[in-house]
Image (cartoon, rainbow, N blue to C red; front, side, top):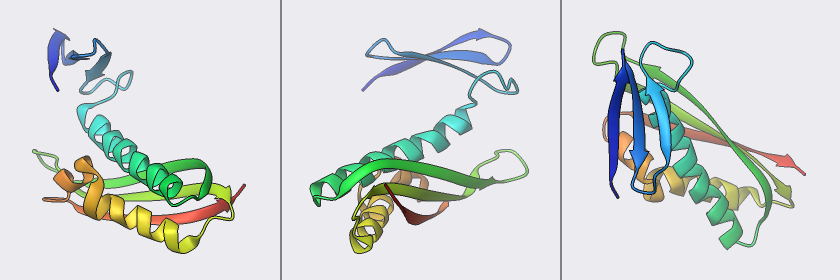
Length: 133
């Protein structure tokens, strides 16, 4: 995996993957994602992949999964994350709460690369709820 980040102007940058996908990010400009927002969303995206894949692998009839992330950061620079919670809203038919509990926990504790990297210095927690389809 490779990527590059190119300075555009002020504190605005364009990130480009080796698949030629681009995203604009900036610090102090609410028009674009900040790098820290992207890290937070990466944790939610990576973990959601694990949850949906885990539920499907367990033959659960999952129809939707929303990861709602909340976080806290240090007040002073470097403004590191100190706490992140990922709350999973899982929708489906006849979902087994034991399976949902296991796959959400396993994501943060065993499989999600982003969460495991962040978890070295950030208190990572999760919660979940089942929403009937």
